[in-house]
Image 1: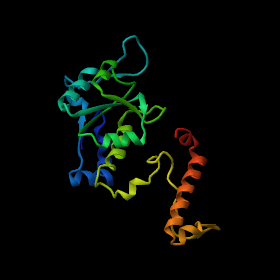
Image 2: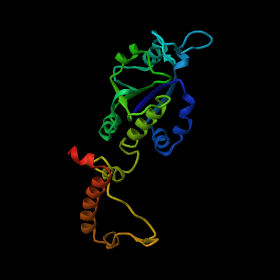
Image 3: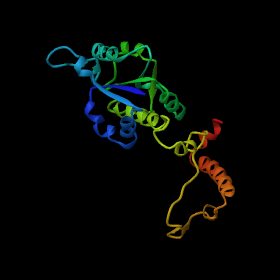
Image 4: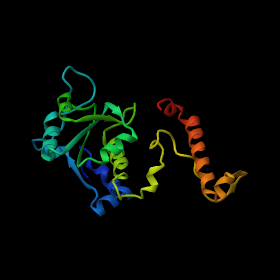
Length: 222
């Protein structure tokens, strides 16, 4: 997968690129990540990428020219363009699987009070990671790429992702590790039994109970 991220805050992606999943994917050649500074496409010595909104109002708006020029510098017929915006559909695990199969993913990060509305028609889709407002689209872009990159075949062990939360419509079963007892709370005996069929049945039942307790809305969607 090739991923191009358009942002006015390229420095935010330094540590992100060094995170295990992303660094491993880049080192193995499974991911080619490029961070484009939208300011590099703004004219003039000040490289202004924002301006006041027509009609008045608080805040600044990202101008269409530098954003669209940055996009057109990397877009190809195979590209899939995503704008991170509150107007987008809420991101789900199924979207992560879909994006992981893209040949070239372009993520556009908004900032300030948002993007000039003339930029939106250049996107293939709008995505939101939740109904709240962030300073910019950089954190959502990291969320999308991290969730997709870990699903690229061979990047992490297949067994680690097949039984995860949301992969089968609900939460994953609760997990335990050493010690077997802590402050009076014991690990369920079945997990210590070595009986793999009994463990499988327990995990299926525990996953449904866990989902019913913490995310009953997921059961309603089935």
